[in-house]
Length: 568
Image (cartoon, rainbow, N blue to C red; front, top):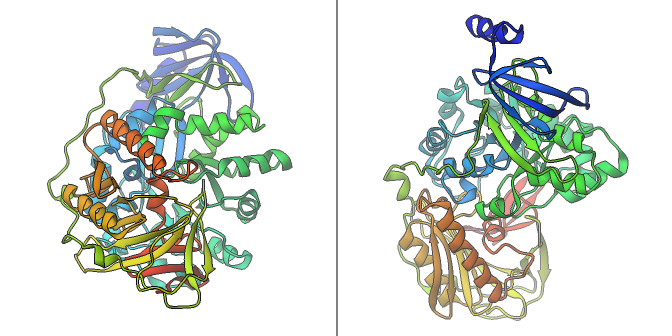
């Protein structure tokens, strides 16, 4: 701690001066010992000056015996994947008790490079929470991606000493790590003494060991307890993901409860969680509640949402209620329901009714769809081979299966009986690339759904049961410079414009949420399976680094031991 700051704080700590604020009559959740301690907490200049019943303050708040825990931390998320501007998301999630966000802006970097990263940093600089950034490591994600920008190790240098940059973002090109590609290790070496996030779905044992040995510290792609256990056994810190598309918490926490293993190397993250889900269910508070309902001890769950993550990222001033730590708190009604009744950031209570500011965005970042209109003929899909690779969608997960089946030979596949046509349209450089394939499990009838949010390259992805509606949907996305749209029987039902890099809206989260609810309901009425989020699920069907099959502008893609490979 800096000398003059210590002197000011110590006067309160030693009882020579009153604190700015004292929270009293509370049950403190001690994440160091696992105890519940009845105490008061003194705050000076946004920091905790002391923990004792003896403290008095210029202002005192009686918590009436409620529980005081450290502010929650989201271990990994993409602010761009929430559809609203960064400050709106942070302000909304903060009201649910998340006071620290570990952000990977690789979605913005894939579209707009350094300008996209700067947008995230600038937009959250004055938000009512701690927002840290991990440098995007894989832009583009793989050699088969057609994205907007390349972000190399040289591009990272200006950010290395930024105090809000904690390390290297998810290293999703695991073959480049395992097979020792020099360009990847140059990036990793920039952050060798910092945290390096991983992205390692279903790596075999030896490859997983090599991945960890290279310097990767975390992973958020474990979908089963068995795989999470293999990662933790190797010293990888597992971020348990519970977002809008991927729901991994139940299986992993049930395994933790069943086996009773240590939870020090587990945290919670959302990865990609839409604003409407946060408003309905909550944020990291939802993960804590869900874990406790599954049988996890409440204090262990709180530690996974606080001190575990802070230690993982070297945030020595966060994650606990202790002298010298930042005064970020959540007030809980009890340790059964764990409802957040109040939130404090730097010692100031967040105002539930405070208006959320939508900060302006540059003109350049609102014009990133560079594409001529498409015609229905571009979605022709001849079937001539004995076997066709079909993308089978898994409800509640972002993984897919390679369903290789026989389809009747035809000059143009026409969807039937649960099969849809899916396409990815390159939108950054107007190259004319369009990949078309067959998907199963989505269920759309008499229309199409399209999105410019398609991880990680964020080209336009469209799924439907006829070529005409698919073309109408893509052209609507071009018109609005990004967004979601639903088309039925030749007409646009509704479009949610996402003009900021084709990823976010500046129309305000209330308007976004209202439009999205109508569109989700309509998509389900048109046959999209009830267990599937029509837009979030669609956005992940273009991500080549997730097993097994994806659609890209170059064609259908399969994840192999050597990385993604185009099959058609």
